[in-house]
Amino acid sequence: MDKDLHKAGRHTISQDEFPHWASERISMHEQLIAALVGRYRALQYGVGMIIGAHPEPERLLEAWRAATPDLVDAEMAGSIYETETYRDAFQGTMAYLTRTMEASCGHGSDGDEST
Image (cartoon, rainbow, N blue to C red):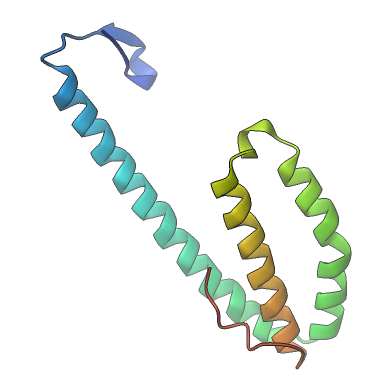
């Protein structure tokens, strides 16, 4: 059975070694996902504060609304982003940012919903 060690290249492992190798890979990916979620949440809070403190919230919202279609089109054009999970997360976060900007202008919801 072949396994990919990323930078070390491909190596053959026995069936007996495979469960341990697979368990290590799953653990590593769980840790990476947890780190990405932590970074995402911290950035989400920071961006929310920046939006709330913007000196011209209406101008920011206008620029955001003008740029959003192009941002979405560019992001969705890549084949790596064809998964439903990615699309849902991306679109949910874009909606969160829009609600946060609208709230800073006194429109719509309070922008407090997390995605």
